[in-house]
Length: 244
Ligand SMILES: Nc1ncnc2c1ncn2[C@@H]1O[C@H](COP(=O)(O)OP(=O)(O)O)[C@@H](O)[C@H]1O
Ligand SMILES: [Mg+2]
Image (tube, rainbow, N blue to C red; front, side, top):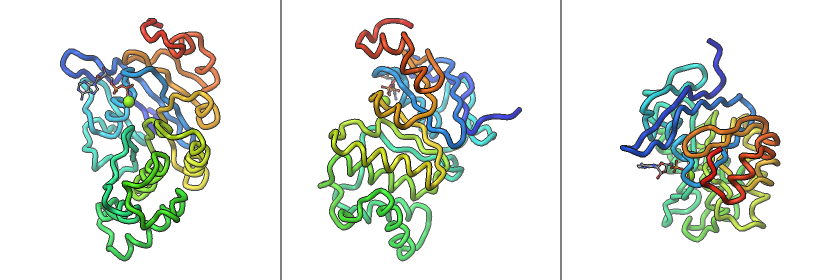
């Protein structure tokens, strides 16, 4: 059977009595940017965890580039080309921006000399050159998000999962962050899946969208179709209890 670049096939994730995902079938086309939408607690981060391997589905399958990776370890998935960034960024605050990227590279077993040179490429790509020798703890939220992107790049990803990448970022810093994300796709050919709440951002970034509510996919389609959908508008207008 011909499968898309990334697919989850009826993935269910239960934490004890809490069903965080219920029969979620996600399909991501290579080269397209896919958005995951939904209110707090809808299961978006859990879906990323199931794809990256941090969480094992209770039932269902995960396929990447046609291979069943449902039982693969997180590090095998990373080798296969899956990378992610976190909703809450976790840099080593006492290390410089460059050292933070070098640590990520060292995990791949490259020498210090190679790591230093390669780190420069990624720091440059995300536009943090001027901050390269500064400790990560003094970065703004937007700069931290860009550092996370540089660290993710160091694993040579084919698929990048971005969890609330503009969350907590001050408005003036959002355009340059979005520019980096667009260039990940255009210049590096990376397929992106993004959790994002801001509709304006999504419409400028994503091709397709999946709307989750209470662990289930409620609406899918082009990002324009999903943004216009009545159920999405109703839930996003604040009434998160409305069952669609
Ligand atoms: N490790 C966990 N243990 C128990 N419950 C969890 C765990 N991770 C997530 N959940 C629960 O699963 C549901 C979905 O959470 P999450 O995926 O973080 O949602 P979202 O990212 O859409 O806000 C929530 O009810 C949350 O409390
Ligand atoms: Mg989340």
